[in-house]
Length: 515
Image 1 (cartoon, rainbow, N blue to C red):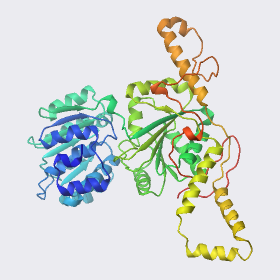
Image 2 (cartoon, helix red, strand yellow; image 1 turned 45 degrees about the vertical axis):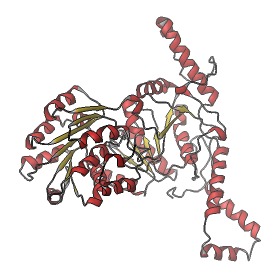
Image 3 (cartoon, helix red, strand yellow; image 1 turned 45 degrees about the horizontal axis):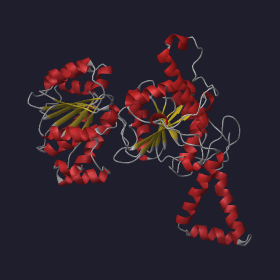
């Protein structure tokens, strides 16, 4: 299915094509026809499934552009307000659509000025209710959207939402989007929506089919080394690393920056100004790695994130879906990588079953594999590189001291020195060891089904790092495991300056990794 089949205006299609969208996501396919029919909807869909376009495009199609505010989108956080506003502006810019972003901590005067010329308001509940209560705005929108409704409930905005709807006209189209459907959200939908059409994206559609999902099994003390080695090998264009706790974000950010990476952290304890600067830097490309907590990254909308790393596997399957939904957007391919320990294997299995997805096992690349990848990348770069005048002058000067072969060898040595890889050669579990973990898991579950009492008396779990007593097992869909040779690893490419290992070895060079 294509976006043209919805009958959108040519200027909207032009904006869709410019954004790089190829085909509608599942929630877009189901929601957009209903919205275009004028029906209220309640859509259950996870972050990263294209909800903004699902409600934004059909609303833009129906705007009369009469010089008044025709649509209001209510979101839980300032960051999400900015991102939704930006996306709606991009979709409607060829139509001359203007959006106003309304949230606390910013100038009332400036926001009111923007509202005067806007067709769409994107607002957080608190500030929007303030403007309504104080009589500073008088609007009559035809469209009202509640985005991330469950998140607004968790943040205590339910009463504010109810009060806001008392100021809004009854003759309106109301659209509600939520990742989950707790009782309070269902009750709210009964009071603010009129005979809504319900949409629910099934578990099989929860994770984007454009996202490849891999996991690597390591010991706890190897997490940092494994992350650095994966960053060096995969050379992500733009990546997000998820941590469970704010203190872990700060520690990991400090560590990566000390290793020469272009990275910044994002979490709830930061001031709003700092958070906005970090997001702006990440979206603009001045930093390549964002390290964040789940809450801080909720609703983060950056279309060119190539990799998502789970430094720790999340506790909840919903958090996993939210995390990996940061990549594989706008029809592009993405890669989600989880670093897990043997003790976390049960959590990995639970997430796979809950989400209905498949994570494939991979082995951390060795030093020789990273060097081979670097050499291949350098060969391509050299072949494609144009010869500058400054380079010609440098070589001519060097020819006064060396022959041309020696010059070439020395320049190549400089490049390889900057990308030298140090540290342990082997990090994490091998394919055989991972297969033993999988086999032990199956045996443990099978034994538990036969005799739960005996299994509970059997001592510590077989996931506690034991390397014996399990037969090698393969071929399972949810636990496919690839051999550790470079020929069987994934082919995401590019070279990058390497890291040092915490177990020894020194970094060659200390310059910034920002390309």
